[in-house]
Image (cartoon, rainbow, N blue to C red; front, side, top):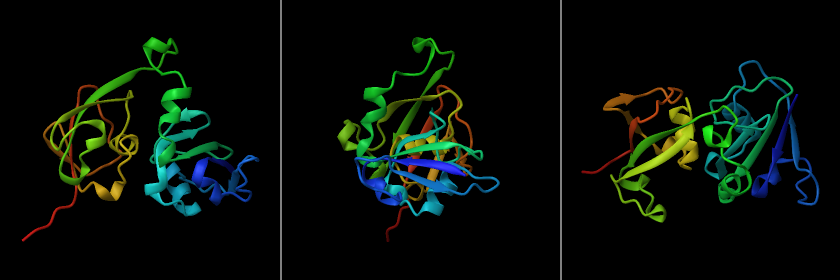
Length: 180
């Protein structure tokens, strides 16, 4: 059995959504479970799920495996700064032995993020845990998987969202396009 702790507007998926109580959903474990498969089974819409996802207290992404008895923490898209405000950074500067990496991301067309001050095609430095996947990058950027049609890493098209990125990678993200 899995214990899924839900926060903010995601509390509605718990048996007791009252904010004064601990909003926990008990979800039966299935062989091969990932965070994504659990979220889908619970009916949580991906656009409402933020990039702050935890498995047993560690930062995770949709492709992260989940073992029987695990605890998941799911934060909604409108609570994204919580991780940066309240949890100390991981990496050599934190002295915990983990490491961080930087990738250069360029978002095109509707994937651009004017709120961050970057225009379509402009480079954006993104910090991730070492060995993070393309799927993790999309979650951290708060981009729904279906919104990104084409991923190019270091000049090569990548179809596997579970592919691990390396430090210094250059990533280009494109939405589905149409026209005529």
